[in-house]
Image (cartoon, rainbow, N blue to C red):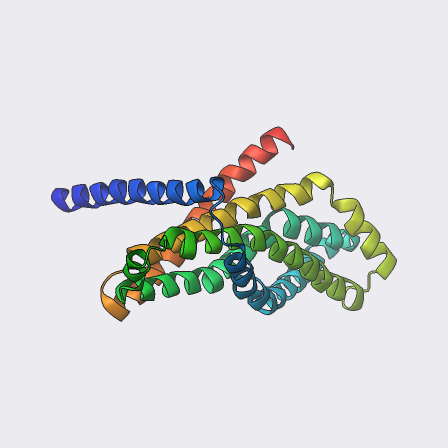
Length: 257
């Protein structure tokens, strides 16, 4: 039992070190200007445009459910007008950045890991090295840059659609006047609320790209291994998003309030 635990801890330490060295290589390429912008644009389309519908649907439903629950609770205190404040602040500060990152990781992140993992088990990554093409520059940098650039935009879309979902419930179900709902929403959101969530998504995008690309490069074991490493990549992304969100929230509230 002790031996197994020790082996697990050692593998975790070694794996973390390898992942950090992988991130160092990627950032080194970006700083050196070794970026294929054509590939970045292609990845932006693959990761961003094709994720719009699922994020919009999930965000609309989240905003609507939040408004329904908020209306039921706040009506007990005669404060149903504050449903708009509840929905707007919850989505902008926490729900949209975190849930949007979850959805993005499960769709775009899993796709990246599966693509790179399939290339790895079929020796296509080795082939790129053989013909003199750096796989980090050609395969990883565009994907990580696309994650970093796309996720904030998707989360802003998620916030807007979620607020609209709450608006539909507030106006048509809770019978809150439309002008009142919009006014309360605009009053509730300060620039600090928006930028705190926006800064989180920049970090989450980098985190998802790093984890998913690294797991893709580590994939082994044929088609079965592709599935295993893809699942591992998404699971690690979820865990690290939750942990980093807690840390970032504490830092942001400490300095910005």
